[in-house]
Image (cartoon, rainbow, N blue to C red):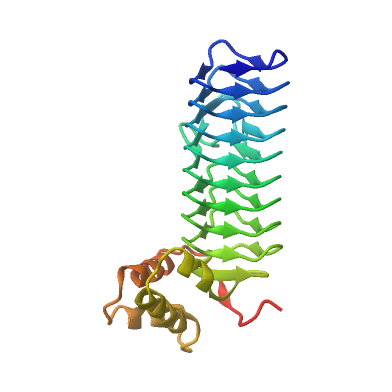
Length: 262
């Protein structure tokens, strides 16, 4: 274990083997940090925060601070849970849950670039990339292998589906379906074709997703009609995932179609 002499680490904090803590970092009493984590300088980790093994926390990051919720009560017991092998770069902010017993949760092998903000009760899956200065409102859910472009903003309670990608500088107040490319203000502009290939989806799976995308967005049917038509056919597991996501969209709905982000 290597703790810089200027760091302030509460004696009640639990640190695993081979943890490094940099200059002027503050670690609170309820914090648990797994083995081989590197916590760089001027980091603040406070409240009930559990961090797994092999994570990098960059300079100036703040994890576990109170949520930006006017109804939040300071006595509320809530926290942050972070899995293994994540990279959380400089000045990221991750706020704890806003209701009793709730958490903001990050899975494994995610990459949060400089200045990303995760509001209270967000859920991040695995292998997600969140580029610089993305802002996620409370309760946002980002599913596995999604890529959020730099400077994107996401309304509270929305979902971004698996293997979706969002163009930098975009804004979303509705759900982004899995496997899609999304841009501008709440638009889907096509499938994430390159991402699907890189993820190892077969030609058959990709072809079915193209058919599913056309049915939802290019058939001339409304979403309910398209889903009803989809229910009459047998689809692959991947295509069913696409339809199930759309079926479970809440009142705000899903991105509309626009053929180009130009």
